[in-house]
Amino acid sequence: MLHCITTIFLSISRMTMEDGPIAESYFTAYADVCFREFGNHVKFWTTINEANVFTIGGYNDGTSPPGRCSNCSSGNSSTETYIVGHNLLLAHASVSRLYQQKYKDKQGGSVGFSLYAFEFIPQTSSSKDDEIAIQRAKDFFYGWILGPLTFGDYPDEMKRAVGSRLPIFSKEESEQVKGSSDFIGIMHYFPALVENIKLKPSLSRNTDFYSDMGVSLTYLGNFSGFGYDVFPWAMESVLEYIKQTYGNPPVYILENGTPMKPDLELQQKDTRRIEYLQAYIGAVLKAVRNGSDTRGYFV
Image (cartoon, rainbow, N blue to C red; front, side, top):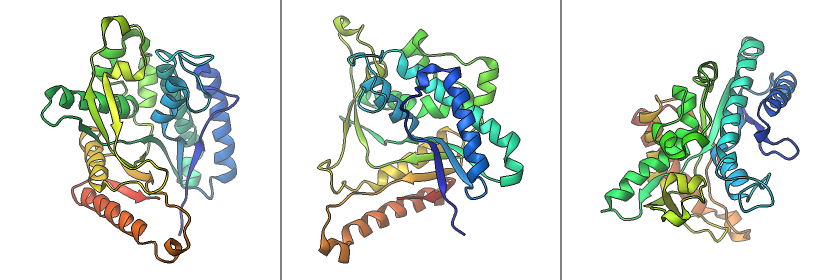
């Protein structure tokens, strides 16, 4: 039997997640309709798609909807990024609680949360500062989302770096968010080089997600639009890190693959993508054999 994974929430237009409790209530009501109408056909739900990069793109960089940032016509990269991330987690917990209380027994489905997963490697292999910066990058990209879902709170390093601009979970909210995801969905395409950065005092007030993280990222691969480079070891490393750091939750790889130019010869003999998928599926198999609870792979 074919089971599909359906994402409730892809992007926002009129309703924006900086609206807090109002957006949470609307989102929960919307999810209620989705569960009621489609729950007999869908067994796996993800509430938020690529929560970390959605929030960074929409509220730190301003490059994706709703296009807010400090250098945009409206927005504040130093605060809204974290407020929205916080609200997404609370909205997810609300939807998960709704499903557990109202639909789980009848439909038997699962509700998960998804994020974009980079593998981070040091810009300079001999640099201790870059090695330390890798953990900060993981705390900000992974721990920002998986910390609350697993432990009920943000990573200590993130709390130290962001300070009072990082929202605080109440005891009740922490209990609601912790354990609210039946599985973790990940999107993975390529790794990133990490370089430690130290801001000059004159620039210290220009804070955003990246300056708080204190790293510079260089993405590896061919970004011409067609044909990503192949880094299957990065996929294996991502799954291993999630296993070791966040209690080995069930994982579904929701996105992976490489685009290619439209080409008749390629359609008849698509060797490159066959080799790409063989390499990545092999990496997932290695991770599973090493104990990762990875249960599905989508391209």
